[in-house]
Image (cartoon, rainbow, N blue to C red):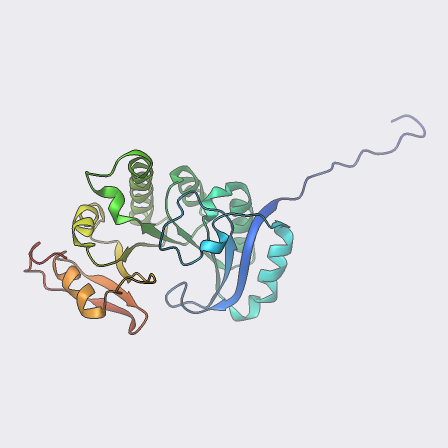
Length: 256
């Protein structure tokens, strides 16, 4: 270095997130754990029944380290962090960064996803960065009558299902569940999905809610579960979440 030269300081751009919100303490987003929840903004799917339509689009760009500060503020109350949305896998770089940092804190990491970006899930699983994946499959995408965009997205979700199932069976993805959000008339759709869900994977039948549509009640969901011939978890607003063994002798009769 010549006299008078100044040392060069490497400049690293901060990692940023299109941020949608933070819940410092939740006991419903990861069964058996108290967690905080980070919501990512943006989603390529935009389900008509989405619980968070206000964060399907738009921008609120934040520094990822500011999000880590939020997590640290809740650290004494939680044992894990859940990444949700929107769709967190739309922002793979910041999702990976946050997962790495959360793991370094000694906290468990969970992800709620629609599964349309299987390569992102494969990366997180193979690098040991995720402890729970809740894969929210859209049952109607599996019907033979579905074409176009939904058909293509359904194909990607099937890849995600296979990746997560393999990771779970190998022990590198400790917890994996498939969530099906159901409305009246979902029976045919469930019959198209359930054979692809391995017996050892937790299958959750979740009560769908949308203005003007009758919500399926516990007995309705039990009747659907009876057609599947397997143990499931049933989730409703009124009864919370229960395990249901089902009537394994029902076959496919009575699907609604």
